[in-house]
Structures are given as C-alpha cells and as structure tokens.
Length: 115
Image 1 (tube, helix red, strand yellow):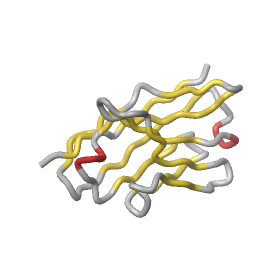
Image 2 (tube, helix red, strand yellow):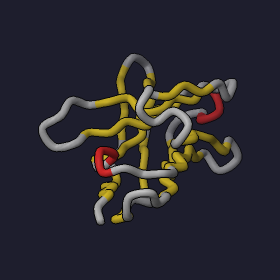
Image 3 (cartoon, one colour):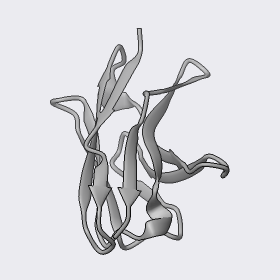
C-alpha cells in the first residue's frame, strides 16, 4: 500500500523559509519520480517541483531559484526547501508519485505566508 505523509507546513512571514518533508512507504522509493504540488483556494492544482530517480530536478517558473527539491533514498523522504516565501505561495502542499499508472498523494501540509 502506497502511503505519503507530508509535514513541515506552517505560518511564516513574507521573506521567510520553510522546509517540507514527505515520507513515502509501500514503494521502492529510489526508483520513483517524486513531485511536490500545491493548491490554493479557488485555483488549479499546480506542479511545483519534481525530482527523478536520477536526482534530476525541475521547477515551476514562479518558484525557480527560491525552492529546492531533494530526496533521501535511505529514509525514503523527499523535501522541499522554500526560501524567500511570498503571500502567493500560500497553499496546501502535498507530494505525489505515479505507481502503476495511479497517482498517489498525501493529505497535504498547509503553508500560509502572511504578515
């Protein structure tokens, strides 16, 4: 059974930083591409960052240079380091992966950027 559990969200002032974590189980983690996504109220789901099994990364334009995705194949975790946060980064963040043509995602962790 695939399970993804996110943590690390919270309330932060503009310009602040947060580090999100996602713990994965039920898959051979090191073989999987992992995504961080976000969804703000009234907005579409957005792919924020991706890391492949080979550690190749990709970012959505608005976060490139501010966010960094990384993974730890020993602890089966994927991280999202978020710096220089802006109010428009406020959203529910969750990790996801594709396993046997099904997309699995966790319950999400809320990030609120507000002064």
